[in-house]
Image (cartoon, rainbow, N blue to C red):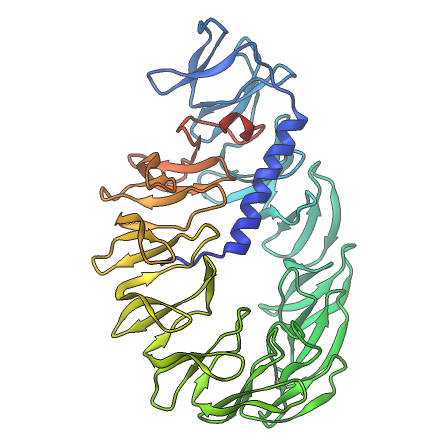
Length: 513
């Protein structure tokens, strides 16, 4: 089943919604005439008496803006604006075949094929007035919630940060990898290899691009890095090296829940260091996890002896297991008993779930006030609570994760997908051949028995009928699709949740609620 990053997807989906909302609020719309779909699947404009004012000849149409112009799709990949007589005011050149993201000021990332014979897309920024940044970049993508875009020229030779007006606010010689707190992880290609460093928001290398890799998360305060000699250290969110690269390994997400992090010496022995790189718990273990929120760390004392210590290095749970994972945020740890079976222990080391399962697949999830675990036995997946009681005995092939409203997608033995609740009851019966998790807008992509894709609501009803060969959400109230009978796989269409054609630029989600 396709993995679903709820954090990223939720933030990105909500960000797109907010972007559209701000754009539409800033651009008043005219209600004198409005778009209407004709029987021939073309769009035109009618007046208040439903009389055609502009004959239907467009593939998609947006409402007129207060400035008297409206965005329309003129043909496959051809977008432009018209006046209230239907006269074309602006036709984007070259052809645009995909829109990607939008900023608070309405700037949209668009991909265009500048040289159709090469079929290599270049990226630019477009607004209702035309190209803000011409499609001359190898890549442009949204960089932050502040309306910045990152652009790349020469396939990674140089990178820019652009604002929604297309102005360059930062440039440096290298490639932007990701944002890391208040700085940027960047790379510079030398001798055919990417070398990592840290760049500030002015484009200055504050950590030279001489590192093998930097393991960072956008919101983390610290990141592990590996230098050119294969040694590990730690960088903080300001780009300062606080732990010098002297260690064979430093666990990812250092200092997340304690002022100590697990590291290993040149002999491969693990201990714990502080933020100055000094040993606080001497290297003596076969392996070690970072400390969890409860102040306990999983330790592999020797091969096949797994237990837990506190931040003083004292053994809190004896090493009587052969393997295990650190404690999750709900206070449970999955461990493997001496007979090879998996169970779950509490923070006091007592069994919450007796060790009788072939595998306990993920950390616990609290759903409807109950901690739940997916377990595997004899090649099938089932669901238990934190006491080890069966909610659903092993009968599924695959599963996802429960969302904020208690829906979880599972795959049955007949390879069909549906959604269950925390009691294992079917919320949506398994009649689909593929399902994606519900988004923040409460819609999910579904593959129908006819092998075509559509969009369903939380009652399992198709909001958009399954007539597409490809479908994905574009914001919260717009979908990007390719119709099943369209042989041109570049021919994306943008529809609202009623199936009406829309063009993303200047789009107003409030009209679709």
